[in-house]
Amino acid sequence: DQQVKQNSPSLSVQEGRISILNCDYTNSMFDYFLWYKKYPAEGPTFLISISSIKDKNEDGRFTVFLNKSAKHLSLHIVPSQPGDSAVYFCAASGASNTGKLIFGQGTTLQVKP
Amino acid sequence: AAGVIQSPRHLIKEKRETATLKCYPIPRHDTVYWYQQGPGQDPQFLISFYEKMQSDKGSIPDRFSAQQFSDYHSELNMSSLELGDSALYFCASSLRFRGTDTQYFGPGTRLTVL
Image 1 (cartoon, rainbow over the protein chains, first blue to last red):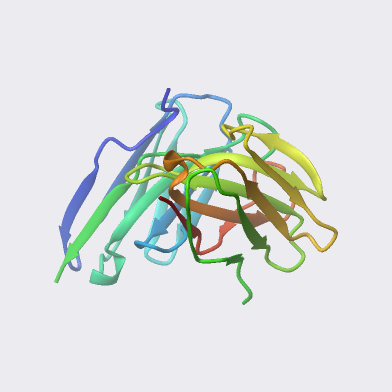
Image 2: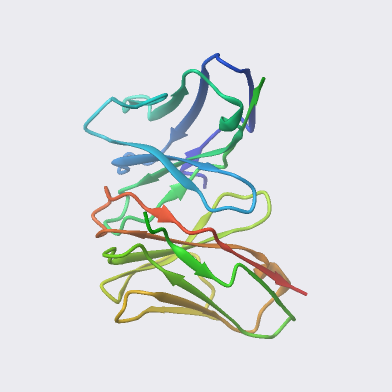
């Protein structure tokens, strides 16, 4: 049972344009959501997070939006750069009180020069 | 800034052998998490420790055990290795496990079981 879903395995955008990565979740107990970026053979790198009490969080080129009623969050990258090309994982925590993360399947972003 | 350190980075073992993976959390972080990522899969939670006590357990086989030591480093011990144990093993650390604390990941240990 995949509690966190990233339905788009891959996304290709042109440099300078906006990249939008989507994530859906099923467990209403999740109260903290994170996005990680991952290169092959490296560990996930934390990008940005959002608490369930907010609907938007912004950090430089990265903005995360949370729609609790739809159980949906998205990561916007503006403007996209070739160095953003990587696998992006959405993760959620809060279903237990131990902080363990439940990950989505990942979306491979390719930013073309 | 100091990051999470994992050793070794690569490990090759035969079936039925044992392996020990080590994790050194970010200084002052008190919580350690272990995740397993199989080929083409998302990371799966294995086990976590807070202040040297096990705090949660996920899909970790009985053949695996782990602990967190007084200096907060953690070790994942894997026995009777099987081919299916081949994966990337990530350690992450955070400051307390209240569910809203960001986890920072190490570079991972790639375990190959032959």
